[in-house]
Image (cartoon, rainbow, N blue to C red; front, side, top):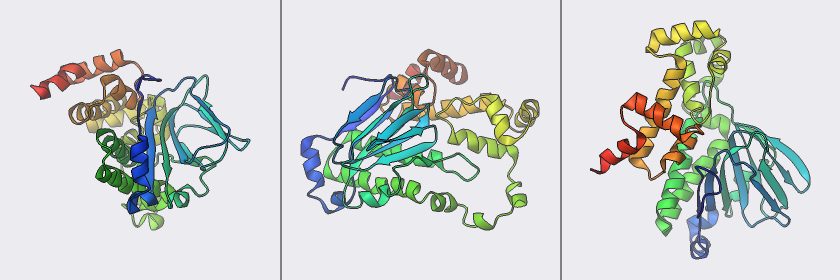
Length: 300
Protein backbone atom coordinates (compact mmCIF):
# COMPACT_ATOMS: atom_id res chain seq x y z
CA UNK A 1 0.00 0.00 0.00
CA UNK A 2 1.28 3.48 -0.83
CA UNK A 3 2.48 5.46 2.17
CA UNK A 4 0.07 8.09 3.39
CA UNK A 5 2.49 9.41 6.03
CA UNK A 6 6.28 9.25 6.07
CA UNK A 7 7.29 6.27 8.18
CA UNK A 8 3.81 4.75 8.44
CA UNK A 9 3.24 1.03 8.85
CA UNK A 10 -0.02 -0.88 8.55
CA UNK A 11 -1.43 -4.35 7.95
CA UNK A 12 -5.04 -5.04 6.93
CA UNK A 13 -6.54 -8.52 6.85
CA UNK A 14 -7.94 -9.81 3.60
CA UNK A 15 -11.61 -10.83 3.40
CA UNK A 16 -10.48 -14.48 3.39
CA UNK A 17 -8.49 -13.97 6.60
CA UNK A 18 -11.44 -12.18 8.22
CA UNK A 19 -13.66 -15.18 7.48
CA UNK A 20 -11.12 -17.36 9.28
CA UNK A 21 -11.57 -15.27 12.43
CA UNK A 22 -15.19 -16.31 12.83
CA UNK A 23 -14.46 -20.02 12.37
CA UNK A 24 -11.90 -20.41 15.15
CA UNK A 25 -12.75 -20.62 18.86
CA UNK A 26 -9.79 -18.54 20.03
CA UNK A 27 -10.02 -15.88 17.33
CA UNK A 28 -13.78 -15.63 17.73
CA UNK A 29 -13.15 -14.35 21.28
CA UNK A 30 -10.65 -11.61 20.36
CA UNK A 31 -9.04 -10.73 17.04
CA UNK A 32 -7.40 -7.89 15.14
CA UNK A 33 -8.52 -6.97 11.64
CA UNK A 34 -6.33 -3.89 11.05
CA UNK A 35 -3.21 -2.62 12.80
CA UNK A 36 -0.86 0.26 12.18
CA UNK A 37 1.38 3.12 13.24
CA UNK A 38 1.09 6.66 11.83
CA UNK A 39 3.88 9.10 12.77
CA UNK A 40 3.30 12.87 12.62
CA UNK A 41 0.10 12.21 10.67
CA UNK A 42 -0.60 15.64 9.19
CA UNK A 43 -4.17 16.11 7.90
CA UNK A 44 -5.18 12.66 9.11
CA UNK A 45 -8.97 12.66 9.43
CA UNK A 46 -11.61 9.94 9.39
CA UNK A 47 -15.38 10.50 9.26
CA UNK A 48 -17.75 7.55 9.69
CA UNK A 49 -21.45 8.30 9.81
CA UNK A 50 -22.54 4.75 10.68
CA UNK A 51 -19.49 3.37 12.47
CA UNK A 52 -17.75 0.07 11.72
CA UNK A 53 -18.10 -3.53 12.88
CA UNK A 54 -14.93 -3.37 14.96
CA UNK A 55 -13.80 -1.42 18.02
CA UNK A 56 -11.26 1.27 17.11
CA UNK A 57 -8.28 1.65 19.46
CA UNK A 58 -6.04 4.73 19.13
CA UNK A 59 -3.03 5.45 21.33
CA UNK A 60 -1.38 8.87 20.98
CA UNK A 61 2.33 9.01 21.84
CA UNK A 62 3.22 12.42 20.36
CA UNK A 63 1.37 15.47 19.14
CA UNK A 64 -2.34 16.08 19.59
CA UNK A 65 -5.65 15.11 18.04
CA UNK A 66 -9.38 15.00 18.59
CA UNK A 67 -12.33 12.67 18.18
CA UNK A 68 -16.11 12.68 18.37
CA UNK A 69 -18.37 9.77 19.21
CA UNK A 70 -22.06 10.26 18.50
CA UNK A 71 -21.60 14.02 18.58
CA UNK A 72 -19.56 14.26 21.80
CA UNK A 73 -16.16 15.91 21.32
CA UNK A 74 -12.88 14.89 23.03
CA UNK A 75 -9.34 16.24 22.76
CA UNK A 76 -6.39 13.86 22.92
CA UNK A 77 -2.79 14.57 23.97
CA UNK A 78 0.39 12.47 24.30
CA UNK A 79 0.25 9.43 26.61
CA UNK A 80 -3.49 8.91 26.15
CA UNK A 81 -5.58 6.26 24.43
CA UNK A 82 -9.26 5.75 23.69
CA UNK A 83 -11.48 3.04 22.22
CA UNK A 84 -14.43 3.84 19.98
CA UNK A 85 -17.26 1.31 20.43
CA UNK A 86 -18.24 -0.74 17.41
CA UNK A 87 -21.21 0.46 15.42
CA UNK A 88 -21.04 4.03 16.75
CA UNK A 89 -20.86 7.00 14.40
CA UNK A 90 -17.54 8.78 14.91
CA UNK A 91 -14.94 11.19 13.57
CA UNK A 92 -11.31 11.66 14.52
CA UNK A 93 -8.25 13.47 13.30
CA UNK A 94 -4.85 14.97 13.96
CA UNK A 95 -4.35 18.48 15.26
CA UNK A 96 -3.44 20.79 12.38
CA UNK A 97 -0.53 22.53 14.12
CA UNK A 98 0.84 19.55 16.12
CA UNK A 99 -0.33 16.35 14.39
CA UNK A 100 -0.45 13.20 16.43
CA UNK A 101 1.71 10.10 16.22
CA UNK A 102 -0.54 7.12 16.91
CA UNK A 103 -0.68 3.38 17.25
CA UNK A 104 -4.05 2.10 16.11
CA UNK A 105 -5.89 -1.22 16.03
CA UNK A 106 -9.32 -2.34 14.80
CA UNK A 107 -10.46 -5.35 16.80
CA UNK A 108 -13.49 -7.46 17.54
CA UNK A 109 -14.68 -10.67 19.15
CA UNK A 110 -16.99 -11.82 21.92
CA UNK A 111 -14.56 -10.56 24.60
CA UNK A 112 -13.68 -7.28 22.90
CA UNK A 113 -16.29 -5.31 24.82
CA UNK A 114 -14.76 -6.39 28.16
CA UNK A 115 -11.52 -4.60 27.30
CA UNK A 116 -13.24 -1.59 25.71
CA UNK A 117 -15.52 -0.93 28.66
CA UNK A 118 -15.38 2.69 29.89
CA UNK A 119 -12.59 3.56 27.44
CA UNK A 120 -14.53 5.88 25.14
CA UNK A 121 -13.12 8.82 27.15
CA UNK A 122 -9.34 9.47 27.05
CA UNK A 123 -7.30 7.26 29.38
CA UNK A 124 -3.86 8.30 30.64
CA UNK A 125 -0.66 6.26 30.34
CA UNK A 126 1.79 8.62 32.01
CA UNK A 127 5.48 7.71 32.36
CA UNK A 128 6.43 7.41 36.02
CA UNK A 129 8.81 5.55 38.29
CA UNK A 130 7.05 2.17 37.95
CA UNK A 131 5.51 2.52 34.50
CA UNK A 132 6.15 -0.15 31.85
CA UNK A 133 5.35 1.75 28.67
CA UNK A 134 8.39 0.48 26.80
CA UNK A 135 7.46 -3.12 27.61
CA UNK A 136 3.95 -2.55 26.28
CA UNK A 137 5.25 -1.01 23.06
CA UNK A 138 7.39 -4.10 22.55
CA UNK A 139 4.23 -6.21 22.79
CA UNK A 140 2.61 -4.07 20.08
CA UNK A 141 5.66 -4.51 17.87
CA UNK A 142 5.55 -8.28 18.34
CA UNK A 143 1.87 -8.33 17.40
CA UNK A 144 2.55 -6.18 14.36
CA UNK A 145 5.59 -8.22 13.30
CA UNK A 146 3.61 -11.46 13.60
CA UNK A 147 0.72 -10.18 11.52
CA UNK A 148 2.86 -8.47 8.88
CA UNK A 149 4.97 -11.58 8.27
CA UNK A 150 2.16 -14.13 8.04
CA UNK A 151 -1.63 -14.27 8.24
CA UNK A 152 -2.07 -18.01 8.65
CA UNK A 153 -4.30 -19.28 11.46
CA UNK A 154 -1.53 -19.93 13.98
CA UNK A 155 0.01 -16.48 13.42
CA UNK A 156 -3.36 -14.85 14.01
CA UNK A 157 -3.90 -17.00 17.11
CA UNK A 158 -0.54 -15.95 18.50
CA UNK A 159 -1.26 -12.29 17.75
CA UNK A 160 -4.62 -12.68 19.51
CA UNK A 161 -2.96 -14.19 22.58
CA UNK A 162 -0.53 -11.27 22.77
CA UNK A 163 -3.38 -8.83 22.24
CA UNK A 164 -5.19 -10.15 25.32
CA UNK A 165 -2.09 -9.23 27.32
CA UNK A 166 -1.71 -5.86 25.58
CA UNK A 167 -5.29 -4.81 26.27
CA UNK A 168 -5.12 -6.21 29.79
CA UNK A 169 -2.07 -4.06 30.51
CA UNK A 170 -4.23 -1.03 29.69
CA UNK A 171 -7.55 -2.13 31.18
CA UNK A 172 -5.81 -3.10 34.44
CA UNK A 173 -2.93 -0.64 34.26
CA UNK A 174 -2.30 -0.44 38.01
CA UNK A 175 -2.01 -4.22 38.29
CA UNK A 176 0.29 -4.25 35.25
CA UNK A 177 2.57 -1.64 36.82
CA UNK A 178 2.50 -3.26 40.25
CA UNK A 179 3.19 -6.77 38.93
CA UNK A 180 6.97 -6.30 39.12
CA UNK A 181 6.66 -4.10 42.22
CA UNK A 182 4.25 -6.16 44.36
CA UNK A 183 4.91 -4.10 47.51
CA UNK A 184 4.49 -0.77 45.79
CA UNK A 185 1.36 0.16 47.73
CA UNK A 186 3.27 -0.05 51.02
CA UNK A 187 6.55 1.42 49.78
CA UNK A 188 7.38 4.64 51.55
CA UNK A 189 8.73 7.75 49.89
CA UNK A 190 12.04 7.13 51.67
CA UNK A 191 12.29 3.66 50.11
CA UNK A 192 11.47 5.01 46.66
CA UNK A 193 14.13 7.68 47.14
CA UNK A 194 16.74 4.93 47.37
CA UNK A 195 16.43 4.75 43.58
CA UNK A 196 19.05 7.22 42.39
CA UNK A 197 18.04 10.20 40.30
CA UNK A 198 20.18 8.81 37.47
CA UNK A 199 18.38 5.43 37.55
CA UNK A 200 15.02 7.18 37.64
CA UNK A 201 15.93 9.41 34.70
CA UNK A 202 17.22 6.49 32.62
CA UNK A 203 13.91 4.71 33.20
CA UNK A 204 12.09 7.89 32.18
CA UNK A 205 14.19 8.06 29.00
CA UNK A 206 13.33 4.46 28.13
CA UNK A 207 9.64 5.19 28.65
CA UNK A 208 9.91 8.17 26.26
CA UNK A 209 12.19 6.84 23.52
CA UNK A 210 9.61 7.72 20.89
CA UNK A 211 9.66 11.38 21.89
CA UNK A 212 11.99 14.35 21.67
CA UNK A 213 13.00 15.17 25.24
CA UNK A 214 14.83 18.38 26.07
CA UNK A 215 17.34 18.70 28.89
CA UNK A 216 14.92 21.03 30.67
CA UNK A 217 12.15 18.42 30.51
CA UNK A 218 14.53 15.88 32.03
CA UNK A 219 15.53 18.33 34.76
CA UNK A 220 11.90 19.18 35.49
CA UNK A 221 11.10 15.47 35.83
CA UNK A 222 13.87 14.94 38.40
CA UNK A 223 13.33 18.23 40.23
CA UNK A 224 16.99 19.15 39.75
CA UNK A 225 18.42 22.18 38.00
CA UNK A 226 19.76 21.61 34.49
CA UNK A 227 23.36 22.19 35.59
CA UNK A 228 23.17 19.94 38.68
CA UNK A 229 21.43 17.14 36.78
CA UNK A 230 24.02 17.29 34.00
CA UNK A 231 26.86 17.12 36.52
CA UNK A 232 25.64 14.10 38.45
CA UNK A 233 24.46 12.26 35.33
CA UNK A 234 27.85 12.65 33.61
CA UNK A 235 29.60 11.65 36.83
CA UNK A 236 27.63 8.38 37.00
CA UNK A 237 27.41 7.47 33.29
CA UNK A 238 30.21 9.31 31.51
CA UNK A 239 27.64 10.88 29.20
CA UNK A 240 25.41 13.92 29.28
CA UNK A 241 21.67 13.20 29.61
CA UNK A 242 21.05 14.04 25.94
CA UNK A 243 23.98 11.89 24.81
CA UNK A 244 22.66 8.98 26.83
CA UNK A 245 19.13 9.46 25.50
CA UNK A 246 20.48 9.38 21.94
CA UNK A 247 22.56 6.31 22.83
CA UNK A 248 19.35 4.50 23.86
CA UNK A 249 17.71 5.47 20.58
CA UNK A 250 20.67 4.26 18.50
CA UNK A 251 20.86 1.03 20.49
CA UNK A 252 17.19 0.37 19.64
CA UNK A 253 17.86 1.32 16.01
CA UNK A 254 20.62 -1.31 15.79
CA UNK A 255 18.22 -3.96 17.07
CA UNK A 256 15.50 -2.95 14.59
CA UNK A 257 17.97 -2.91 11.69
CA UNK A 258 19.10 -6.43 12.62
CA UNK A 259 15.77 -8.00 13.52
CA UNK A 260 13.03 -6.32 11.48
CA UNK A 261 12.36 -5.37 7.88
CA UNK A 262 11.41 -1.81 8.83
CA UNK A 263 12.78 0.79 6.44
CA UNK A 264 15.27 3.27 7.82
CA UNK A 265 12.81 6.16 7.68
CA UNK A 266 10.28 4.02 9.60
CA UNK A 267 12.90 3.32 12.27
CA UNK A 268 13.81 6.96 12.73
CA UNK A 269 10.15 7.98 13.10
CA UNK A 270 9.65 5.14 15.57
CA UNK A 271 12.44 6.72 17.64
CA UNK A 272 10.84 10.15 17.57
CA UNK A 273 13.23 11.57 14.98
CA UNK A 274 11.46 13.25 12.07
CA UNK A 275 14.60 13.97 10.02
CA UNK A 276 16.12 10.83 8.45
CA UNK A 277 19.32 12.68 7.54
CA UNK A 278 19.81 13.83 11.13
CA UNK A 279 19.16 10.28 12.32
CA UNK A 280 21.72 8.88 9.87
CA UNK A 281 24.36 11.40 10.97
CA UNK A 282 23.74 10.68 14.65
CA UNK A 283 23.86 6.93 14.04
CA UNK A 284 27.07 7.17 11.99
CA UNK A 285 28.78 9.36 14.57
CA UNK A 286 27.95 6.95 17.39
CA UNK A 287 28.40 3.60 15.61
CA UNK A 288 30.98 4.45 12.96
CA UNK A 289 28.91 3.39 9.95
CA UNK A 290 25.60 4.53 8.46
CA UNK A 291 22.34 2.68 9.24
CA UNK A 292 22.37 1.35 5.67
CA UNK A 293 25.87 -0.09 6.01
CA UNK A 294 25.05 -1.50 9.45
CA UNK A 295 22.16 -3.48 7.96
CA UNK A 296 24.13 -4.56 4.89
CA UNK A 297 27.00 -5.94 6.94
CA UNK A 298 24.66 -8.57 8.42
CA UNK A 299 23.59 -9.86 5.01
CA UNK A 300 27.15 -10.43 3.81
